[in-house]
Amino acid sequence: MTETDGDGPAPRRARGPARDVVPILMYHSVGDRAPGSTRAWTHSPAVLRSHLGVVTGEGYEPLTVSEYLAARRGARPLPERAVVVTFDDGYRDFATEALGLLAAARVPVTLYVTSAYIGGHAGWRRPDARLPMLSARELAGLPADLVEVGAHGHTHVKLDTVPVEAARDEIRRSKATLEDAMGREVLTFAYPHGCHDAAVRRLVREEGFAGACAVGHALSWSGDDDYALARVIVAPDLRPRDLSAVLRGVALARAGERTPLRARAWRLRSRLRARLRTRR
Image 1 (cartoon, rainbow, N blue to C red):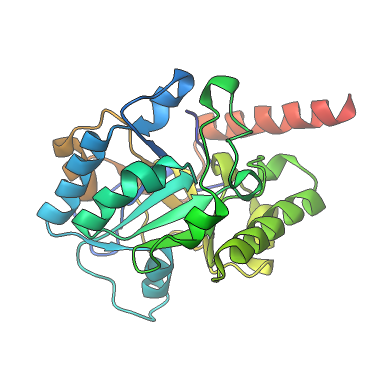
Image 2: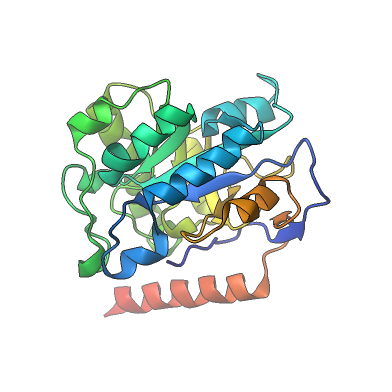
C-alpha cells in the first residue's frame, strides 16, 4: 500500500506527550485471510483486538473525526489523552470482522467509504485486491453512536490529478450518494490515496464538509490544517508496545510545515503521469 499526501505538511518530531498532539490511526481491511496485495493493509482480528486493548487499557479517549474537529475549534473540550480511529474504503469486512470488536471495546470510529462501489467490489483495486464492499443496507444499519461515516471520493481517483470540475463531481457525488444511502449527514472527507492540493482542499470546503483527513504518516496537532489532518498508517504487523509508543507521541513525528522532498517528487511524478494519460 502506498499512501501519501499532495501539498501536505511534513513530519516534525513530537516532543513527548503533548495535549494538542492527537494520533489519528488509519486502518483499511480486517480479516484472517488477506489475498494478494491486500496483505499490506489487512489486519487480522487478533491484531485489531490487541490495538484496541492498547487504546482502552492505557486510558485514551477515542473521538470521531467530527468530534476532534469540534474540539479543535473550541466547541468541546479536547481530552488529555485523545485518539481518533479511522477506517478507509468501506469494505464489507468492516461489518463482519471489525464492528463487533469495536463495539466490545466501546471505541467509536470514523469510516470513510468510496461511494461508487457500494454493494459491489473495490473496482479501483488490482484484480487480486477487489474485496467486497459494504451494501447500502449495511451502511444504513451501522450504529450511529459507534460509527461516523465519511466520504472517500466516488471512484477513489487521485483528486489532484484530474480537472477541477471532475474533482468537484467526485467530492459532491460521494457526499450525496452516502447521505442518500444512510439517511444521515456526512460531515467529513478523506482524500483517496491521501492526494490533495490547495484546489482540492478548497473544493472540499465548498461542498460543505467540516474537515478532511490526509495521510502524512504523522501525528495530528494544533498546527494542522482542518482540511488536511495528518494520520498514522498502522501497519498490519505493528506490535502493541509500538502502537503504545506512537500514541504517547515518542515514536513518530508530528505534522509540520514543509513537504519533504521525497513526497514532493512522488506527487510531481503522479501528476505528470496523469497529464500524459489525458493527452493520449
